[in-house]
Length: 158
Image (cartoon, rainbow, N blue to C red; front, side, top):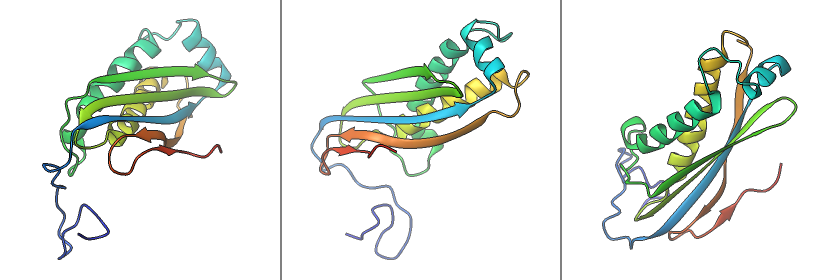
């Protein structure tokens, strides 16, 4: 096996064969943020964004995005997720988005969690762009994963 799992020995891209891997409980949590003007954040909190409930719509979009990763990222396996949890926390400069995905399966759900955060942030941007086009999406990263052969991972605090 090559060091890079998505390339065969000749360097051609491939989908990893997971058929011999045991099914196990797997979980991944990703986090990212969207920074914005304070007036935008206040309008979100007060429910004053004309397109509706920003966090409610972003939560639904994130769940839908997590379920579509196999269609979006070429070498990802399509997965039947057991659950997707999305949380929003506000601070002085924006919204911190956290997504946790779980599955009993043969491959991990890191990409599903990271996609969920990305889609939630993009949805917030789309819903609020009439108020604030300077919003900035970033700091997307895996903060925890468990299950599978590689075991547990926890990101260091930054």
